[in-house]
Image 1 (tube, helix red, strand yellow):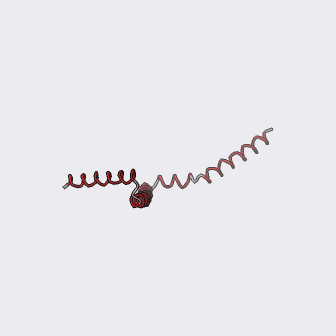
Image 2 (cartoon, helix red, strand yellow):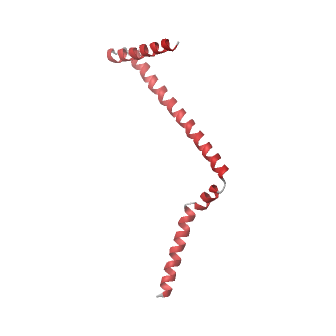
Length: 98
């Protein structure tokens, strides 16, 4: 009985050790002991995220503007009036700023 318990405990501890090793807990604790490296990695990841958002939004906005230009070229009554209203609003806002 005692032998079975110790073997089960050993296999359980081996599984826990393997799962901790797979979770990279050691790398995380080393990173916590080096705060400047942690700050540097966060700055890099934040910059990369910001650039990614900017590029994605630029692509999205360019696509929307392209389709609006195509719709404006078709001279559809409802959409053309809507686009003309947007242009008028933007022009008024620009005149108020100056």
